[in-house]
Image (cartoon, rainbow, N blue to C red; front, side, top):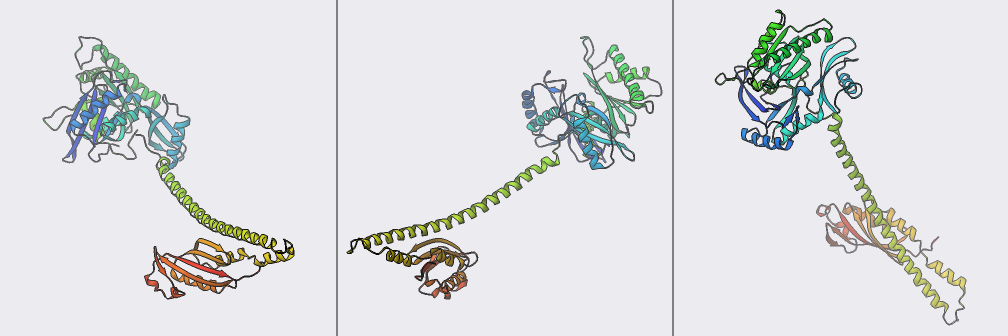
Length: 505
């Protein structure tokens, strides 16, 4: 459980201040290299809630810069008072299904004293059909506040861990400990925390205030009343562990005391007197490599610095779910598809608009021709005969001059080579002038040949052809002899087509 990984920083934050530790490897072990402390004003943190975030943020930024911690990667501790532990059985042994069932249980049936929890779990046993777990949960809002505070100051947080497991890891660094049926006590000037471990994992935690109203009391020492109160509470917790949690099947056999005050030894003596002789009680001190300096105040930060993310570790850092990770990718793909779709629609719309404009030009031309014919008819009708022209003869003459424009347009469109596109067209009487884009110069020659072979066409000529904006003037049929290796990929040809005077069917 207490694996040692790459060198990192451990940081604790409580009502007295901010502490950090950097460890270094020496003789295949880890020793304290650098440690530091930022005291904060009383009232900045109350009951593990940051009251004055702005003031602490400004203090922390200046301190991080002074200590040279900008850009550091750190593991922080989660306040013990905010941790909830639940035991759970899930009806599967499949690792993937275990995680899904835990998520479902936490969101639906697990009753917690706060909303929107951040949680992690460890597997402590399995049988043929189920898995036994311990769930560790804390308010996500509080964790996010701690993480953001560090990040704003220039420190990247890679994990948020329990103080209990961090302290146990620091102890394991000094001596071989399995933490099976073990009570671990962490004692500071104003706070005492008690953790009960089973098979290496904390299953119950409790914190007690050590505030002393007696002004004559010595700083760091416990009064007789406090020693009595604490030992009585520890006795109740030992009974709770043995008879309520494990129903007589297991009991605490070992107590380890840690702390930075004189009261640690007082509590040790009190427990020796009040508990059976069979109870193994030990006091541990943490020292630095330099001058054998005591670093008991940094004991939790030492364990945090050795945190390693693996299957047995507990981390309450907010994690991004797989769905949240994939969401930006899905949005990007959908945006690309939308852009491609919009571009395709725009392309077809533009081409259709060009074709429609060309047809509109032809219709305008035909209307002009109709107007001219009507004018000529009126003139002839008002001639020497005094407007007595035979109507049937006039109608026959108009019908004779009508041309099958639809057939003519179909003819010039059907002969287009693949990829060719009519860009401009104009119609005057029996003559059509059009501009066509080709993929290669050979297509323009083939198109000219096919037009000349049409039964509807009288004559067809290629007036000019341009390559990338440079016009090549063609006289007659000289375009067929133009060297293809000197021509670019896009060609624009201007054609003049005269149709035969055929009566419209």
